[in-house]
Length: 156
View 1 (cartoon, one colour):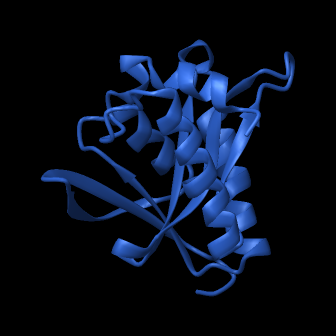
View 2 (tube, rainbow, N blue to C red; view 1 turned 90 degrees about the vertical axis):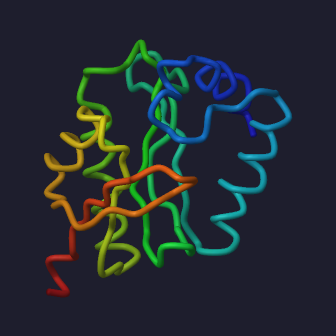
């Protein structure tokens, strides 16, 4: 809950929310509710969820990365969202590697997916760098979403 203020700031940036398909948050209460109910709720329900990400050098909260159970698609999603000051530094890939390792080695998941809007080439490239391959398209809120997936190498 200590990350509400910086999370609110990040989600107010239209460049950050351009490809999130959620329009960003409009109010401080929405961020509070999202962290309390979605992030912490995922840990209570599934035993895992998104991680807060702090920059190693300045210890600043810069966003989130990690896994989320997507019950509506029977999938586990690898997602990330960072403050624009930290884009282009490989942090999505670095945190993605850690999330995949956690998901496969600690949680024993069979498959992890990443969902991305087709026009978001940078995020698609991150998923490909992580070893994910295009799987199929889904429709979310009337928009086409590409699903990339990777399977647990120890279970295949």
